[in-house]
Amino acid sequence: MAKILVVEDEPAIADLILMNLKLVGHTGFHTDRGDKVLSDMEIYKPDLIILDIMLPGKDGFTLMKEIEPMQIPVIFLSARDELTDKITGLKLGADDYMVKPFAAVELLTRIETVLKRYKIGGGNVFAMDNLKVDLDAHMVLLDSCPVELTIKEFILLEILIRNKNIALSREKLLELVWGYDYMGETRTVDVHIQRLRKKLGLDDNIKTVYKMGYRLEVPR
Ligand code: CA
Image (cartoon, rainbow, N blue to C red):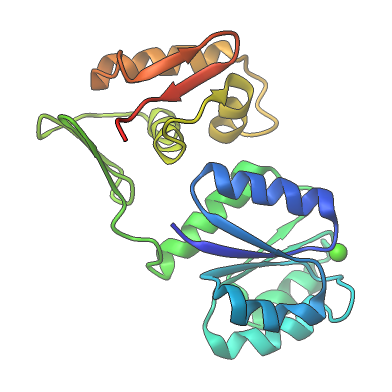
């Protein structure tokens, strides 16, 4: 998993991003001023940076020019949605540009894409009993035989694995797998959990947490 530095001066947005990074297994760090970014990079040695543009101390475009030679991937996350800003950001060497407000699931997906491009955080294989899940190759083996999962089933499984032994609410799973603005019901989560249990023989391991959600139980 990756170390991600979140450069953001709005505490609520920073908290939201950090919480979501943690849920999918990344380690997040936070910097709230532009002029602290370079020194914090020395300390945290991030694999990827999420960079706001309007920041106290130093703006994101200026920072991008300084970060670019270091070859660390950057995703801009800004309230500025002018096309010229996007083009400026990408021309300066950023890997992606997202506009606020944003859906957490979209940011997480874009982060994964950039990390894959840089081959960061590879070798993610989860194994338990007769089950083996290659999180990078999106491959699931049960007794060494491939199991076909839908994309949503796989994402759900991946989130359970990255948060093993931690209870996750249905609402949180719905948001992470289907997206923040998905119009479905938490019942959708139950249906997909049932399918995962059945396809992967995880009846005993995917526990129902009473009136809350689910937890993947893995022997420590
Ligand atoms: Ca800002």
